Length: 372
Image (cartoon, rainbow, N blue to C red; front, side, top):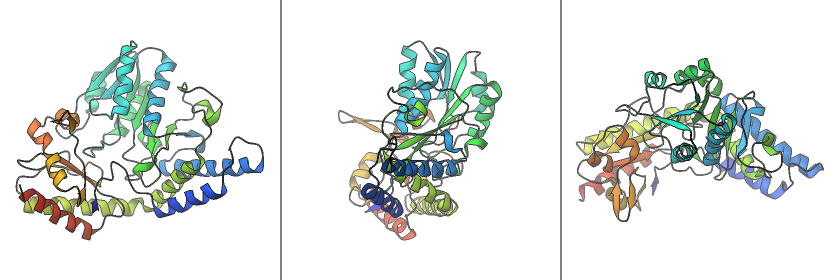
């Protein structure tokens, strides 16, 4: 079976498994303990913090470990809202639910939220952002890249707009870190979400980059772990896995980008040759190198994937409710018809995807499509 669903999750890198296995066997201490077992665990956590900081161009004291992307997004959003107590927030209409749902909750608490539209490619307009700024705007939260289409937003431009006005800027980079270069200083982000299992690290661990002089209120209360922003004994071995995945990503990034871009183009070109009428959803180049969202003519994406379930792993952005499929909100926001949105399939390649696998996948996809 060919795995082309790496935006959902990635397999653990072999070196990550080895690092975690060693930690699980040898490093059971509590990092907060004063004795040598605690010191050993604390050293492992700080090494991982340095590895991750190095990947994104941050300082050691700007990394806060969390249980994953959802918690990191919630900490960024609610932590900012608690600091200001009221105000206006700007986001986009294509954010992940881990951003949209906290914002919907804040609206119920009296905060005002503006949901910026996107163009036909899925891009947020900087002009639209500027037009919607208010005197009481306290936070801008725009994802770095979209999980369905791979579209990379103009984050550096948005960051400059926010920085010039003293507005807190958060970006959910769950899909980007480890796939493309992400440098928090060049992007101008105050807060940035990182997810381990999107780049060959373990699930259940992530991080929030927080600019060192930015004030943020905690959303969990307990002891003083993670600078008081994330109480609870650290998940040492998963943190070690995240750190190792970050170290590997920095070494491999250039090669990963080249390989995934080449193979993604190969997949798209071959499918277009053999299935006339295929349409690309999103921008052809301003996107993650591994992500390909395409609509197949005259068939629902979910039906095609059901046919392929034992041969090719991929996904759709549509949701199934009581036997009825609803189109992806992301694709609808880009102006796609229900029919085209429901016919979409997302293929997301990984570091280990090979040319041979792409050829096998193309054969399987074409055969499945033509069987209807």
